[in-house]
Length: 309
Image 1 (tube, one colour):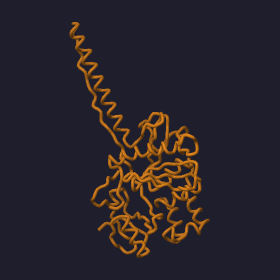
Image 2 (tube, helix red, strand yellow):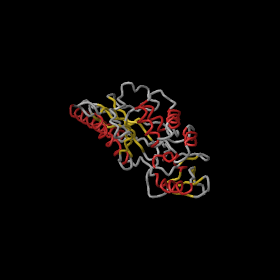
Image 3 (cartoon, one colour):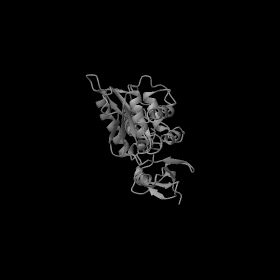
Image 4 (tube, one colour):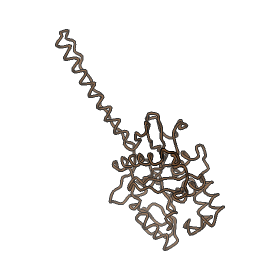
């Protein structure tokens, strides 16, 4: 995953191909995100070899046992260290199990995949759902909110390479009657969609600045084989309750902050303020999301692509 730095980040560094474009709206809710692949923490363990002692004497036997014990201890220590490093940003022990980051592909549909994994397993038409909600409620999802005419927004979000963002999360929270907490890796800020609606359950997402991943709780041991598409999440807890005497949601959100802190320490986030963009409608060079929103507000231009000059 690209790391945050004071220098400008280009979209090419984030994997955006030539000819692809993004939509930026002046309205904060209309900001969209593009996915990137989170870095996976790895650790190489050296294999220790032991010299075989063949002396039959008692003293040599004792020396042999001591050397074997020392080698075993060193190997165990290395394994423990590797396990600790691999856990950074991948899972956090909590409540006798593990709060786990479920990384989804960086294929321009990361938000839809992450939300689908938590709220609608097996449902692959979440873009259509968004389009229907917007079309059926033009008063709520007006041009002022969307940042562009309603049909234009609908046509854009239905394209497989269009990114989802705050508008889509607000729609999903309302449609499924579930609060969605999105935790920003860079700042640790929690944006809760559906806040104030007294929803009984909370779904948790992790946002890197340009990519969304899902968070679940599982009693099973984390394994390197746990990659998307995940083989079986039937026994994972995907929604956290706020209604029981035991406030599971609060406990898991605290654990999720630990997860995010580990990601932040290894710089697994991207600062949207450093993007280098070009307005595809007038050709102006723009740096960062803030300038893009200002340009959109001033000119009405909303299509931006990679700056190649």
